[in-house]
Length: 253
Image (cartoon, rainbow, N blue to C red; front, side, top):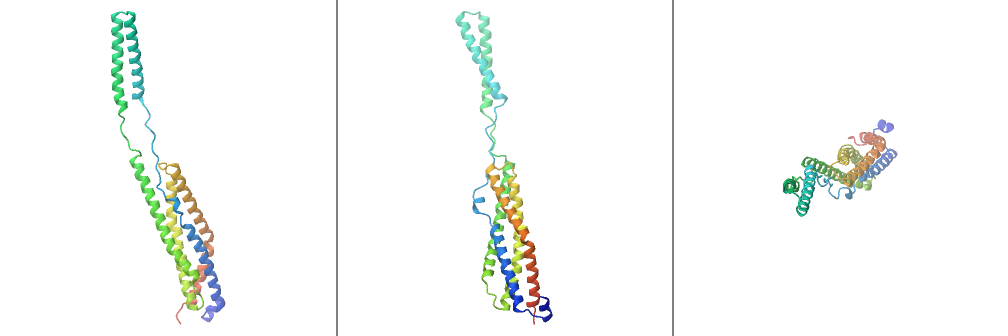
């Protein structure tokens, strides 16, 4: 490049070198962009929320059982005392106890039979889970839309001819734009999806299967980010070379 700068033009070997770098860069970008697209099966089904089990039987139920037992025992004792010729006072007491227990049992029975209705999921938790799921789906959709458009551009670049200086300059411009577009997708859009997926995976209001799906999604996106960081130095180097080439080859005569 230095010799080309001194001459004010670019020779064929330098043009071939920059084309080779661009081709390799397009291949790497294509692999990263493909990996950023999540399989449809990950979010094909809604994320299920945890549903509470049947309400625990509390003091009303226990009192109802106790008074029911007392009423039954007293009633049976009253019957036995009648048959065995017990005194009127004894039969009166047993009848009173049995009747009182039966009355109390009826009250507790009505209390226990009409528990306060409650929704399947706490409204606040449901609002939070709906917000998380909506944010995740929207973020994934926006990422995949941008990735799909860039993938079409990268495929076109891979097939473009580089027979002339003008074609190479045009390819170099598109490559520089593709590098910038990939950075936006991975560092911004996909990073947002990763953060939301982790939040869903850690949200106790989602069922275990839904949390597992979100956890798998977060792991996948994190792996894509790691590949991008690993290749970024190489792509930045090719970007600098491409821009240097454009400075020399794309300036007006």
